[in-house]
Length: 283
Image (cartoon, rainbow, N blue to C red; front, side, top):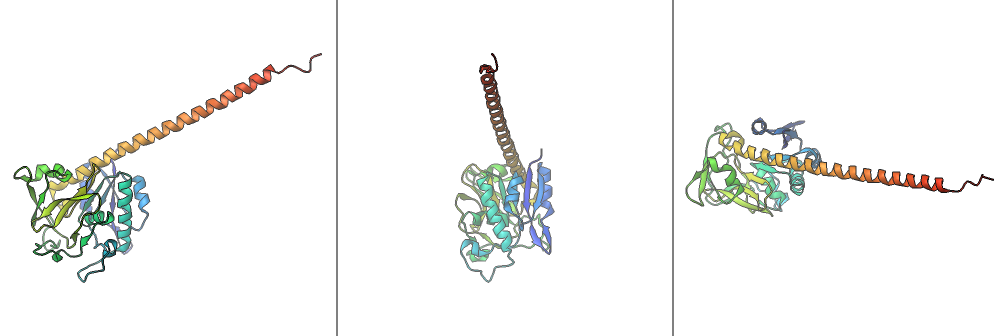
């Protein structure tokens, strides 16, 4: 059974929207993509999801990491921010795998107490990151990213990375963002960087599958391995969920059987007591 991958869309003019490239990648990887509105209840997603894909969207309002809006802040959607922050916390608590791309990486970071650059050009000597789809092809390789070789992200991408030693691996990526991770959140580590030092990848410090990348992997064929890794982790979660449900059902069956046995024993004892009473009608 295909694991359900919840994709959180963006609400606009009464519609919930998301890039269809994500759906294709999830389907190709063997998952079942399901679109959810950020105007619903995060608990509904947790109820059915085996994995969660957080994707691109508007800027994250800086109030969620303790700052006032910069003049460089662009469109925001506070409802989506609140929904996804709550969802990340619930998913981590429930050990549901999460992949964040673009804004999705940033919301994971903010949900766990991290901060953002409201605009990448706050970084001294920043290279260009905010290319625009429509002005350049989304599958164009625009700058390099270096990946730590002791990371989960490296293990996923190693077959598509250029490896130049035990601690050095890199690749080309696209780039369509103007916000970026500043301080990483609790339980996260930075594992990929662009040449200007900007954080391009984060992941959980424990064994859980919580990974974020700043580029847009849906447009890059070699990055399909990220979706494959998410679906694989989601399948593992689905199997664990089914095992837990089986154990619960077995325990309930044992309790019912024990209760029925007790009731039968009580009935037998009552009958035996009745049979052993003397017949007072005899003369």
